[in-house]
Length: 116
Length: 111
Image 1 (cartoon, each protein chain N blue to C red):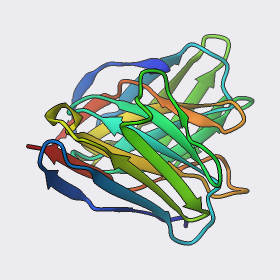
Image 2 (cartoon, rainbow over the protein chains, first blue to last red):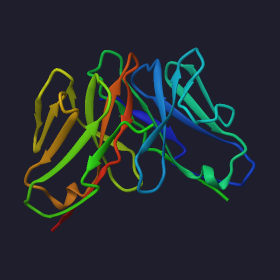
Image 3 (tube, rainbow over the protein chains, first blue to last red):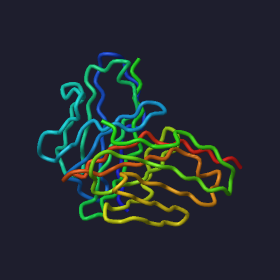
Image 4 (cartoon, rainbow over the protein chains, first blue to last red):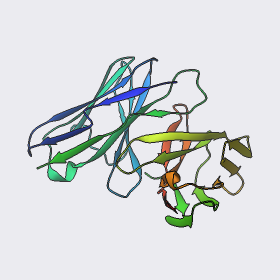
C-alpha cells in the first residue's frame, strides 16, 4: 500500500533557529499533501494544504511566514518552522492521498519538535 | 478549525467487551474516516465510509454514518488489550477532500 515517510521523527532545536521537516510519498505521486499539528492529548489541527507547484493554502490563524511550506515535487513536501519558539513545540504530521485511491489518506509517522 | 466532536472522550472497558465511539460533525462531507493513533505515533487508517453509505464493516470494526444527523459511530467488537489507543474520526470536505479531525476518544482495554 501507499507509504508516506516523514523525517526526522524527532528534533530538538534552540529558540530562534529554523527546523525543516520532510514528508515524502514513497511509492506514489502526491499532488496534494497536508500538514497537521497535534498538542499532547489533543486532536490534529490542519495547518495547511500543500499543492505541488503552487503556493500552500493555510488555515486561518496559521502564520504562513512562520511555517513555510514547499511542495517542489510530486513526492516531497517540506515544512520549515522558522525562528522557532518553545510554544512551537508540538507533534507535526503530514499526510497524502494516492491518486485514484478511495479517499483514504496515508499519514507519516510524525515529527516531535521540541524547542528549548 | 476542528470539524466535529467525539464522545466519549475516554472509554475504559474489559477485554472481550465491545467499544462504541461516536462522532458528530457540522458541515456537508464527502466521506468520513476513522483513524487510530497509539501514543506519540502517527495515524493508522482504519476505515472510510462515503457520504452515500450507511454502514461498513472491516474485521472487528463496524462503522455507521447518518448524514441526516451528521453523526457516525465506530464499534469495535470483542476488544483486545492491543486495541488500546486513541481513535479519531475525520471528515473529508471539498475538492481536495481536506480532512478535519474530531477531538478523539482514548480507549483503554484492560486485560
